Length: 318
Image (cartoon, rainbow, N blue to C red; front, side):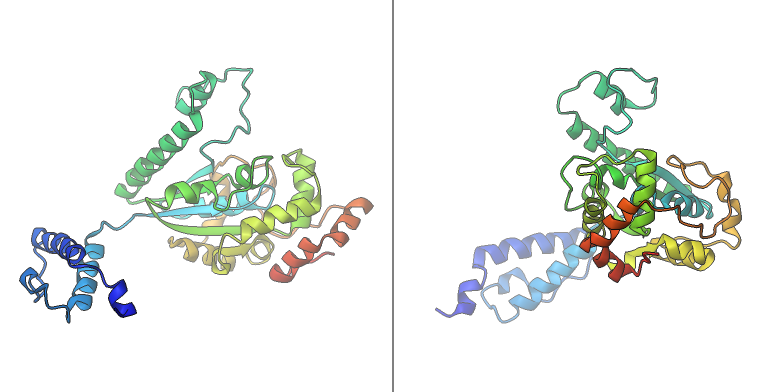
């Protein structure tokens, strides 16, 4: 028996596949193929018929709605870019989302959260609460996206990327929001990145280094792992944005397939989002780097991973 015959589906398998496809065609009033089930014993058209049936099945599947997600590390300028996106017409931004993080949760003090079932589930010690949290999170996003879309709006999620990549928990291969939501949505990703010298220094100043060892090289390891999960055309540099805000914002909106309004950046202070710990003014422009300690300068010079990131994204050391 030839290799081709070995890999050919048997008759019963072909019958089942064709019966399913033809039933779908019948139910959807789609033009039937010109090969009937009675012709199954003649295999010279089988391959093309199966391909046609597969196309019919795929065409019958409901199209996933589009969902936009912004990803970035903490202290990397993501809040400013997110506010600029929220300023666009009919865009509704939900900020710093993560289904299971314990960051900001105080188990010793019950907080008044009447709209937040999952925080109350943590206080009440419901078993297997992370599984519950992921299920509720997905359903909430599905319903919120549908609600916004039916009213002519666009839903954008700002992922709390820090919770996935910058804590003592294991670093995931795929971030939590993408893992949970990609089965339900056609996701448009926007990833923003800042020179890690500036973002890590700011992270330390805020006391938000939640991983060990607390080192610049470890930070670069996590940053590179995060960036490698996305394609080059999904990534923009914060450093470019503050130099050319209008043109880079147009690029961001194109990646997210969102409309762009002229002078939209003039209204960013109208929008309040969580995580707004950086700039105190609405002016978008480069700012001078704070002075680096000698120890930090040595960490930068000795980090091979920083040199790798810099070679890819053309970040400056000075």
